[in-house]
Structure formats: structure tokens, C-alpha cells
Length: 428
Image (cartoon, rainbow, N blue to C red):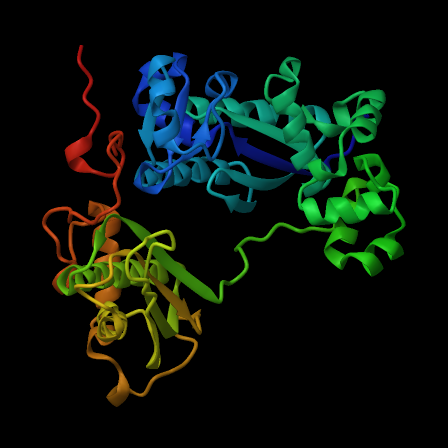
């Protein structure tokens, strides 16, 4: 008689995500150490194992390590967010084919719940791994267990033990191996246990994962939270964190960027605010949301010896909306508070709050915004999604060329999956 199927959680995580995306369109990077830089090419935000072995680390300021990287043959790329976002969409589309119960947890990881025996789960996890490598081109590790927390731990195990070849089914590990992992790994290795909680747990004598799994539930809930108590249950194999088909509804949305060169001119700041307002509008449309309050801000560098200026404005809209015209007009009120000609602004942004689902509140026809009625926000968002960012814009945001203040990405790779002019060329 065959073993009954269990409701197992599959945790799929893409290995060194940004670097893996870069290697899809540039195979020459596969045998090179690679680092990825932050906005304006400021510091290292991602790197592969080869670069780590050469002594480079997350957060290294690029201007300090650029010469050393060049001397050691390290390939460097600016952050290609368009590529990373598109590859993520492709990965998630493939994963949704394997399970109806699906949760995208971040840009590079997801949970799936699938009924299977541990043996069948191993074969399915291997198929997921192979399919993503063949159809998208990214390497992944898959952890399988009875709970989300154990599945995350199984994924970490798959990454660290080469013989597992990127797939770890927790129930198929020998009992002594599981006990050894629980006894030797610190509690900080558990998903959701941060530094502060780790220190408080250590003060109670709870140091290892095994200690946490055996901890008194009443004590954990009293001293910490119900969330950590659920984590303890999950470590014991009791499901306590269900999949979320949709991530928690956000009550704020922020769009903020630093400039490659400082801005002291009103016209340039008007361009910035117009562009950011319309990008924020597109995000609202994608999330099916509208905003009731707009806050706009800009600031000089805290380390600048010149004039310090950090103006901001908050505008309550007549009605919640995603209308790019309404958001732009609200943001432009910041212009009357800035010290143009004196201050050198290095950053600006939009903070939208009072978010609610689009259509949640009915607006009488005489009070509808003209552009909202014509669905201008939806039209702009759909064109930009199909044709790429910068293909269309309203007013000062309709820029034919990249402005001088735009984020510096001097080592940007091809955006070959989202921009027609940057399609990859194959020479035979």
C-alpha cells in the first residue's frame, strides 16, 4: 500500500538572483566573478560566490574597490531593474503551472503547496528546478517540508550541502541529520528571527534552532509575540503560517530616487516631480489602488557644506485617485517651498497614503475627475508596460531623452526582454 500524500510546502528561491539574471543575456559572465551596483553605481548590492572569495562584500563603496575589481577580473554591472522584474514575472508564471496554491513572497522566491508523498515531492522539486533552468535560464534551489518555516530551512540546507544538488525534502533527510542541523544552527537562521529577537532568546538560554523548537509556547507568546509562537509551531511540523494568495494590502506607497547630479533649477525639479508622480500613478494602477494623500519632498545632502534644505508638502486630494494629472499637480506644490538657485538637491520623492482599493468608494458623476473618467492612468500604465518606461509621458514627464539628473547607470547591461532597441543579437 502506497504512503498517503501530504500537504507539502515547496519553497523556491533563485540563486544569486541579480547575477543570475545578468548571465541569461550574457553567457560570458558564467565563468567570471560578478558584482552588481546600487542606484547611481554607489555600492555593491549583489555578488556571486567567486567575487566573495576574492574579498568583495555587500555594501562595499564602488569608488573604493573599483581598481581592485578591475585588477582581479571582476565583471561589474549597474542594477538592471527592468530585466530583473521581467525575469521574475517569467519565473512566477512557470511556478503557477505547478500549483493552484501559490504565494510570491519576493522578487526571487515563492511558496507552493502541493499534495504529494516525500518521494514524489523530490521528483517534482527536481522538475521545477530543471524547468526553470530550461525555460527561463535561472538556477534555483527548492526546499520541501510540511510547513513554510521548515521549507525555508530545507532550502538553506539545499544550498549548503552540494550532494543534495539544490533540492532538499526535509522528511527525506536522515533523522540524525535533522537533529544535527537543529542542534548546531543558531536560532538566527530561522526565517523571521531577527537580531533583536536572537539576543532576547539567548538571554533565556534559547540559542539553537532546536532550543527554539522545544521552547515553551506560552513563554514565547508572552515574552515575544504570537508570530514567533507560530514559528515555533512550524519548527515542530505544525502548519501555522498559511500561504497568502495576495500580499498584505499596503497602506503607503513611496517612490524616491537620488540624482546622478544635484539639481538647483526649478524646471528640472518640475521634471523630476512630474516623472515621479506618473511612475507612482503606474504603481497604483498595477496594484488596483487609489491614493487620498500626496506627500512630496526633496533634500540636499546631509554631508554637504552648502545650504541645507529639506522642504516637503502634504496635499489631501479631493477624492482618492490614481490620476497622474492630479498627483502631478499636488506634487508641484513642493516647488514653492524649495530654495532654487541656492540649494543643491540630491534626492526627491513621492509618498502616497490613504490608499484604498480602486472602486471601493463610489463617486457621483459630477465630481469625477476628467482624466480619471477617461482612464488616462490606466492607458499610460498599459502603454509603458507593453512598450517600456519612458515611451510616453504627460507634460514635463514626456521626455524624449534621458535628463542629466537621471540615475547614473554607466555599466548597465542590455534590457533585452523589455526594450525593442536592446534586443539580444545572435550571430551565427
